[in-house]
Length: 242
Image 1: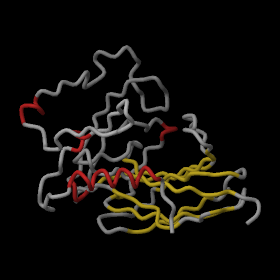
Image 2: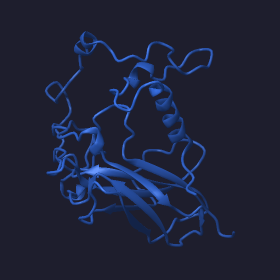
Image 3: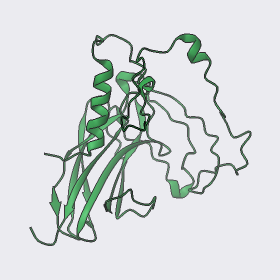
Image 4: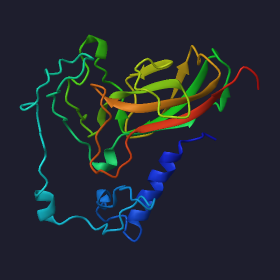
């Protein structure tokens, strides 16, 4: 049994609560109408209508910016430099049935420090044939592309890091990082075994996260805002002794 982050369960429950009473053929409900809004009395949900917004309400949305024309930052150049402003278009969005998804289907509950272990990852609607190396200037460089069947072209990442009792700093130096581009994957789910060859460095609790990427490392886009993006995570105990 794979132990999952509680936030995933909460998110799934929230979506289920919104769509109760709608048939499978109904259009997805505008979940952003019931977005989390903290209140002084401790309740975290807006109890307003969950009905889809009217057409004129959608038309009234005014973005602050849609490109880098007004930005004071240098343009992003495909390398991992920031702060920058990226002009690359988001690109092609798959239809809902073709949205990329993945799941960690097997992982150890505990491992010893420095001992290799494996994760098994199932992907769906992700053609793992496109990976523009970030170190070579391929980061955020290419627009997202679909293949002839309308599926996302890309790859997936796996990273593990030791964690504590608070949100970790945004450090790019994970304890392990693996990118998987094996030329496989498609509409039919398959399973990939990811080797964490060096294991984890010290005793404690670690999280291992797997997320899909398009050719330029962005998480694949979804047709609707209330689709779960292609990411999954597990917690693993790292102990010297059983």
